Structures are given as C-alpha cells and as structure tokens.
Length: 109
Image (tube, rainbow, N blue to C red; front, top):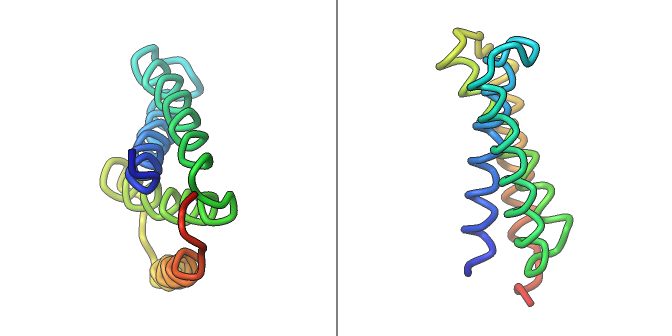
C-alpha cells in the first residue's frame, strides 16, 4: 500500500481521536472516550506501517504538521475555538516546512 496513503489515514485517525479527547470531557463521556482510544490505536498502527517505507523524519514532520493543522481547524469547526491571524501564519509556516522536508526525502524503500 502507498505509504503516504497510510500516513494520511493515520493523521485522520489521530485528528479524530484528538477532537474526541476534547469531547470526552476528562474521559467522563463514554462514546467520545471510546472513539479516542480506537482513534489513537489506529493512528499509531497506521503510522508505524508508513515508517516501514518512509524515513522517520518525513513521517513525523508530516504527522505533526498536518495533525496540528487538522486539530486547529477541527477545534474551530466543532468547538468554536478561534483561529487568529498569528495561528494562520503559523499554519502557513508549518505547511511550508512540511512541504520542504517532504520534497527533500529519498524515494521510499
């Protein structure tokens, strides 16, 4: 399977789990808590599989950058958390950094 597709699914699972963690309200709400546990487990399993084919630095940079952007946007949509101008600038810088790092990688093995 394509390692970038695995990583994309891993990031989707991680962002879902992170948003569920907020909704779990200190792990007092069972459904969001279950989504969080399943999401993080799935995310780490998929990410570990992508690391079999891609350099760890590339995987982690993409994971962290895209995950942070996804969590910030998800927080804005689901929890009415603000996205400020400095946050937007930070998201742009992270996107640029991830793009530069990923473009300089060696071919998957």
